[in-house]
Length: 120
Image (cartoon, rainbow, N blue to C red; front, side, top):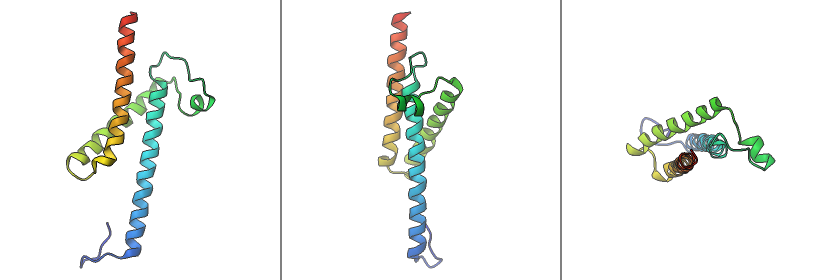
């Protein structure tokens, strides 16, 4: 947050800082939602693509390297933002949606793995 040496804050600098912070937060949220949508749509890997053309075009991939990159990005984001939340720098209201998305992905993987064990 911008401030002068005497502790006062210039309103124009503060508005610029706040709008840039909001844009960064929005960009991060958009990228995370896209990664989560790709993972939820594409995992398990042996399933057919979704019926919807838009879902298939925007979110589905059968490329394992691409899925691994999305998983790595999601895990890194959960760890880094979790550390910020644990240290008190980040409100849980901002961290909770990411945790919820990661839990949904884990539930989907667990259900897939349980069914795969039954089918084998």
